[in-house]
Length: 163
Length: 403
Image (cartoon, rainbow over all chains, first blue to last red; front, side, top):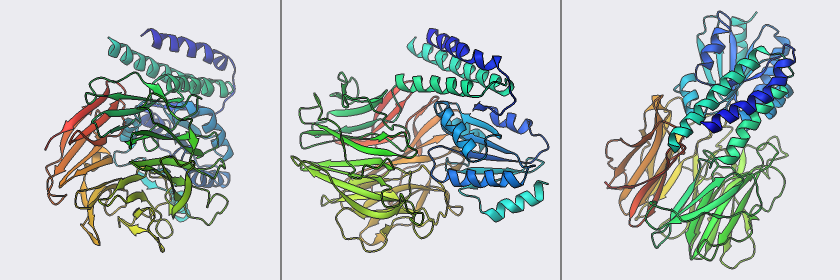
């Protein structure tokens, strides 16, 4: 209890300067139980791409760069990044996302001692392979895809859902 | 009381994180401070808490050896009562280094010929980069030789997912190595490299076992009935079919290695999901693995006798994230365990066969835990098969499995 309280105090002190400054810019948020619902609620009625990735996944850079490219020519597209690493990797994750051209998209990172709990909440038939991408339509019906999404599939979804 | 404190600590951290998230969502400062403080907190926790991925093995006298990573050090202890109590841990690497110890990337321990061998992957700052390390004790674990890097290619690239097998005459390591494909865009995946060092020899000579392995799944090693070393890994067949391969170290390999699973999982992704291998008393090779192939997703088991392969048998509950299987075989008895998560608890589910895998007992829960847990390990020792399972909340569980 003492240790937890101390941690809390330390973190609070560290975060104070951040609260004081101001600039509207996407932040890396901790993805915990209920975060998926929050992500969906913040985009009610809107299509979006939920992209699960990791700094340790060798195929993720290609996937994220492709999404970054797509964003450049499709301003209406919205991508939500969820990294399955831990908050310890936060600086690296935000740097990589910016490199891939996704620096202004919503970013989250798994923040649970039990990643399986978060995986289970996202999709109980997702077994952890990365990249894992969900294409949400306006009604939030979603298509799941493991591995690099074929460009044609992404284009089809874009044409049907994003103006 | 200790446990209660721990739970409170975890919920305090969760609350803090939720709060940090709320701040992050609304505040407007340069995002670096929030991200960095969150990172710092997790790093500190990682440095302090023992990491979940452990390694363990019984020696021929029935002593149970355990290796775990605490902070940036690998520590070894032993138990003479099958896990009831452990000796004071001895640090293997005197100089601190970042050691991979989660899920598929884990330290290994092997005890044979009067030596205690340790191997691990030193994580480098470059992405996907690591060095395979080895140290050994010749005085019963009182002291260890200075750690050595086993891979003779020293570029800061992938040399990771170390696996190890020791016998009375020496030690053999196998790992995933990117040296051949590092600067070649057309090279598929990575390669499996191996190194053998006989007792008393000075260095590890590296040899390539196969080109085009998948990049991020643990390897399994086992000695067969004639003492030959087998390696089982996720391979890339064709353009991007990530099924499993089985090969013998030292045997000439013409073309592709033996295709041990034929799931047809075509994917450009990192499954982070290797398999396991055990050899029974008659030389039968028992394999367990995971595939995400649409036609047959999940865990599968098969046995290979010479040229004959049994059809793959699916196991595990697909709605409970079945994964990370372990196998053990002795005589005609075979044990198979894996993990599942039901939304609340992690479960170790297992079954056994008394006829080399032809017939199996119903799958049954062997253990469960509400917290963060390691993958299950199966050990052979003291004339029995043992489940060893590390849990963040309640520590190491060691259970003798009886049919």
